[in-house]
Structures are given as C-alpha cells and as structure tokens.
Image 1: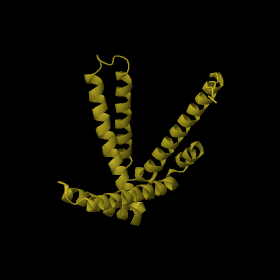
Image 2 (image 1 turned 30 degrees about the horizontal axis):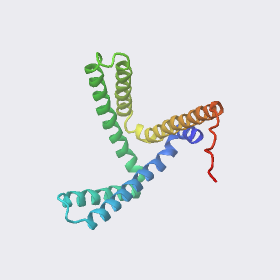
Image 3 (image 1 turned 90 degrees about the vertical axis):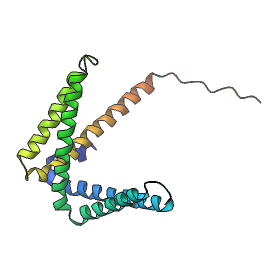
Image 4 (image 1 turned 45 degrees about the vertical axis):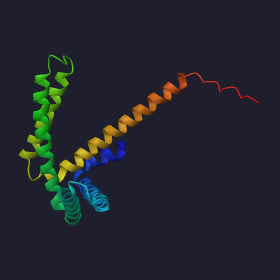
Length: 173
C-alpha cells in the first residue's frame, strides 16, 4: 500500500483512471444488489423510491465506466462539495464545543480549515485539478492506510513478545 500510494502521488494522472473505474463498478454492484433485494421484497413501503435509487446507481455506474475521463471531472466536483461542507461543519462544531472538548477542538478546527483549503485549491486550479486530485487523494489514502497497518503490525509484534504464554487447561482423562 505504501508503494502504490507513493506511485499514485507521483503520477496522479495515471491513478485517476483506476479510481474512476472502481467507483463506477461500486455503483453498478450496489445498484444490482439493491435492485435484486427490492424485487425480492416488493411489499415494502418505499418500494418505488428504492427501485429508482437502485436504477440510478446502476445508471451512474455505467456512465462512469463508459466515460472515465469525463467522469473524473465530475468526481472532482463532488470532492469539492464534500470538502467544503465538511470543512464548514467541522469549524462550526469545533467552535461550538471548544469548552466541552477543551484540548481536541483545535484539531477539529485545523481539520476543517484544511478541508476548506483543499476545496479552494481544487476550485482555483479547475479544470486542471481534475487531472490530479483523484490520484493524489487515493495515493495519500493508500500511504496513510499502509503506514497504519505497518504501525499496528509492529505494535502487535512487540506486544506478542511481551505477553506470557497462557498454559492450556488440564485435560480430564
């Protein structure tokens, strides 16, 4: 994961295509599962809404799969909206709860500011940002996930060395 993340950050334009295809397949599979599930239980109160949602998921996935270069721009716009909304919410929450969570409210505030800054950077460099945002963000995610897994494995390994073996219970014959 660390190597793949580094490569995705180094060449984000190449990494955006697999990200787009993955999300497209995710929509298609989720839509097919939703469609199969709702058709098996047609007597639920929100049958029509769930049916429409499943069909839209399949359609969106097929669109992403059929036009991956164009859909990378659409996914970037969605990321801008997500980061902007999340940034505003985190900043508002951090200010509202600064007395309740005296230490960590600053981290929440910083996270909100970073989210807003990322959204602003994507908007400022639009449409060029569509070429590198998806690959870069996936690369960062892969690297941080890989580092977390390595750290957890090393911690578990050192913990296992400190633990005393537990004797097996005696057998009754």
